[in-house]
View 1 (cartoon, rainbow, N blue to C red):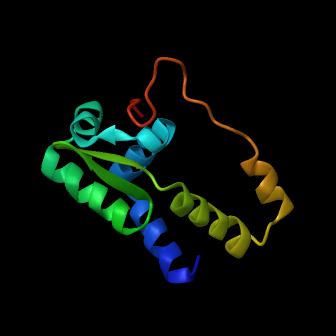
View 2 (view 1 turned 45 degrees about the vertical axis):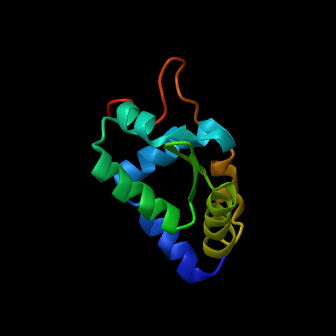
View 3 (view 1 turned 180 degrees about the horizontal axis):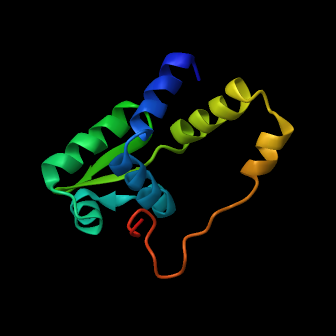
Length: 119
């Protein structure tokens, strides 16, 4: 990933709603979620949601597909992976302590949807 693409992706992620979208959609895999269900789950008005989904899609972090009258959004695993790889390899130079810190997985408590808990 080149620097300009990494900056676009990191910039897109630097917003609370967009980060919530990534956290919500990642566990959904390639199937993704319909825009209406995303809006309902996160409590976001359709125009605002569309703005944030578009920003993530333009940054290469989401994909969309139309099925009948619904638009489904899913994570672009290559885009997310390339962004993470850029930070780890290009910025952190594969530093052993940074890599060790990344090996700890955070799990979402059972019954809680990623991106919807109150903080």
